[in-house]
Image (cartoon, rainbow, N blue to C red; front, side, top):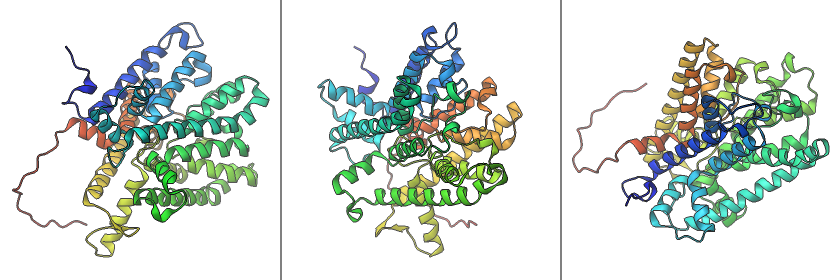
Length: 450
């Protein structure tokens, strides 16, 4: 009797995670190719369905067809389900089904769950899963209520669907929107630049979804007693705060005081600066035309996209903790210290090695992917790098080139989105064999760097 792959002892947790995402993308592609999924006659082409299913499952937000105009209610529902499962994690949702069905969770499944949500230990995984699901549902419901207050008066009953869709899309850091039916194809939230309620609701959902499940756990246990929290939570909150404040000050005092934004009032500039600082945390919405931004602001957006959110969250990127570890290690080198320290704790060498590897991997993928797209389709290098960075960081922001890319370039973006969602280290661990510890080591020799 054949043993399911998730019960096979030879399958590692990393392999289960990447296979789970592949299976979800395949199912989503098949559903989106059905005639009922599109507004026009016939279903979507295989490439359009594959691209959209990958973008939704990997909570990216890059689209080749406008979500509201091209996809039917059924197609939009499929996309939303893919976003929810992909954002929470395939393994998390699978374990949730086991819990609700009253099934026993095996040790192997708990181990996989630990890898999926970046939990520090296997103990208490089921309890943490229940907490994650309840908290996510509560936050998404609150976001939907806030958005319904704005959408329902102008859209009627359809406004409730719009509120639910955008709340889940924002919380899962997906960036899919349905505003094409009101403000034009692929315009995102540019029609709501000055609306404080829509801006505030989307921003809150993005930030809450991107700080990580384990940070929620810390808040539940310790409330606002920051001293009692784990070092990782402190690093996440500190780095997130610095990026948000620094990004806002840059966009508000530099970008949105440029001549092309002179028509924006003071309030519009405030919300535009704040929103464009938050959305690169891998959400993918935008309230202004990104093509009108200065090249330096587009570069700043690319940096924020690649950093992304935090470990064990709905966000992508190489993560805030990776950036923090690298900066702390750099500071330790300047101070001629052997190890990096933070909040009275020493950072282990393994974290430094992993952070360095992640940074190199993400930068190489973004550069190589962007260069290939530039050469294949002949678009400007900045636009190509923006697309590749957005894909590998699972953001969804674009300078308007996605829909016109060739088949090969779209396939490149699909691979980048998939790699970015499952995680760089997850892919590496899935395709490599863990080395066995050996007593003997190679002789050491000094190498000069810098």
